[in-house]
Length: 275
Image (cartoon, rainbow, N blue to C red; front, side):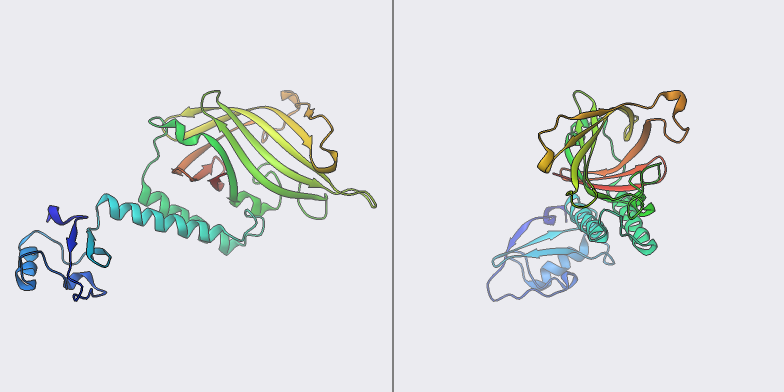
């Protein structure tokens, strides 16, 4: 049976493939349909588990559940399910309680299927500029998520743009980059700006990232892009509230070449895609 895993078997053009792979409407070269089925039945095979078939005009590919190919297909399907669950939620700002639940359940399915993340073996997976497409913390309607932060909406005329994380595994730089639009009194146009919250990071264990805040830099864009960047003074530690220490931790629960899922130290679920 091992020789049949992901093997390619020629079929004559007048053979039809059934929707059910369990009936095996194809046969091995040099064997009749009946002898082919008898051969398969003699091998140890759990008839309760479906066989995955991928067919072409002249060949058919078999992949048994439990194989690497089948697991990769399942992970891809679960990743698509998660991305679909978080799409259209404005990065979580428009998420309802039902949306939060569906996203969390989809993430747990993906995490369970893919298994534990081991960044100690391949830290380079973190490298790059990642775009945030969902944060469960944004459902609190503040830019700080579950941490202190300015509210969105009518209290302050702040519109949240794209959010990125720029990670350099060599320098250990970890920058949160936030695009903002600040309202201005009429007749002045809104002010566009990019805030960069610079951190350093370290890997703890196999999948936990600890970040330490260093500084915040604000750079105007758009019509005011000619202005120099402004470094925002850091609040002295003695005046900093206990809930805002400037550092934090999160666990990377899933990562591949283009998608990353993390869970924060306050339970925040975040989904990123490479940009």
